[in-house]
Image 1 (spheres, one colour):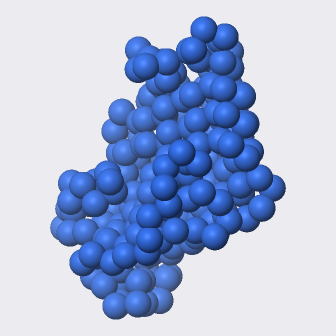
Image 2 (cartoon, rainbow, N blue to C red):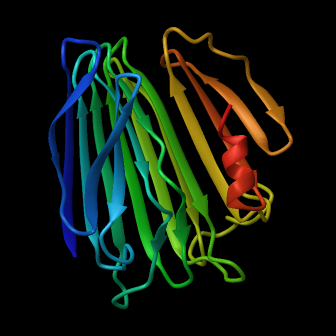
Image 3 (cartoon, rainbow, N blue to C red):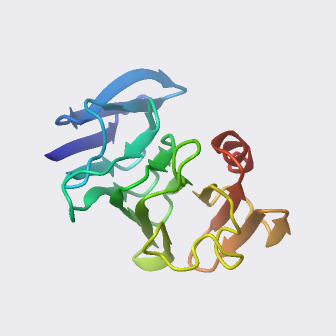
Length: 238
């Protein structure tokens, strides 16, 4: 299955945000929900099971100058096996203009046994824009080993590299559960905050949570591992 969804937001001139384009295709369905303080809110609704191996799903987001958007999903995304040898893909491309804000806060990606999934995100931030970007991965459903999943995130700020991060788990990713990667934890994730108005916090490690200021912009990255999705969410809500 192939699907494309697109979200374009513009400032309305009255302190709010208008969604000038909001469209999707099954299973990527976008639904606008009530705004919160001038921030347009959209939920990603899965119109079918998956993604299944062989699916190619794409989401494009553009937030115009002065606009603010928050994107959630209504449930976790479960990557499932499909055609033998096939890979499922979920690609997110986001452009955030000067003075704009994007909050990307979906539910977890679950790498079910037998899956082969690639989640790729690319974000382009103009100088003076703000971002809150959360990725969470759960390695398998309850009581099962995970399939193969790769999560790759690329963020640029003011035309300069800010973040390049990749994680691979599953039977074809040697050492992924070892002490150098997840240390046996079944849940992991990261939260990137880019905000000129927020003081950049110093590097710190507290248990399985690490906080790292980034050199390429006014940005801080939190990374964490956890025994379950609930604990992971608490770690990534500073």
